[in-house]
Image 1 (tube, rainbow, N blue to C red):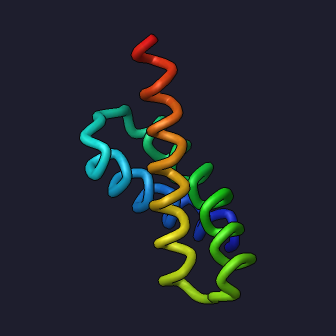
Image 2: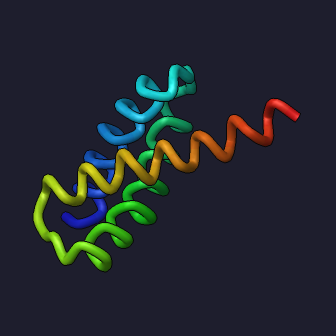
Length: 78
C-alpha cells in the first residue's frame, strides 16, 4: 500500500509542480518527478520541521519536484 500511496502523491505533486514551473512533461516523467520530489522534499520537511502527515508530505513533494524541475530546466537550457 505504501508504494501505491507514493505513486498517487507523486503524481499529484508532479502535476502541480510542472504547472507551477510552467513546464509540460509526459505522464511518466511527471509521475517520476513527483515521486523524486516526494522523496527529497518529504524527507527534508519531515526531518527539518518535524511535521508529519499528508499535508507536510504533499508540500514537501511539491517543493522537491519544483527543485528537480528547476535543475532539469537549468541543464536543458545550456
